[in-house]
Image (tube, rainbow, N blue to C red):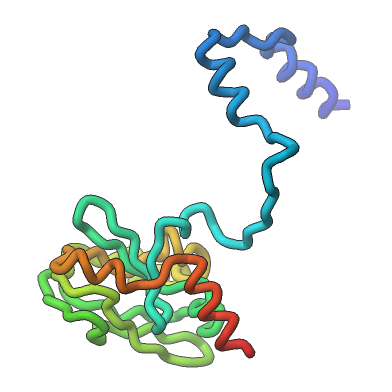
Length: 174
């Protein structure tokens, strides 16, 4: 009974009519509609991971404005299990391509971290000191590890995109 009253009160605050769209908005909305002649695909990757580049050591980097945000892939965090400690570098530390810069420890294993690019650490994710489980919970979001300058932008092109990384993972499981 109380639920019906709450729903009535809530629905009373909304107009039953939808607002009219301008002609520009109608054109934009029409472009978003699914077309029957367009191919449909299923993807198991996150929308956030589409702009990521990966190493064969399972680190990822997202480059925005000359700064790379670095983390570990979903495959790596699943293999590690529950992360209980994150050892990260100091801000200002210079890293070379594939140089070891820290470690993650979990209840079942420990894993070294390797820099996907050459550059200088500009920020570390201080949230991980109190909550290392963010690496498991949101490895492509709040579970990032470091941010760094990109010293050699051409190195980004040498990393795998999502499709190449997915193929790499499949080859490991064969």
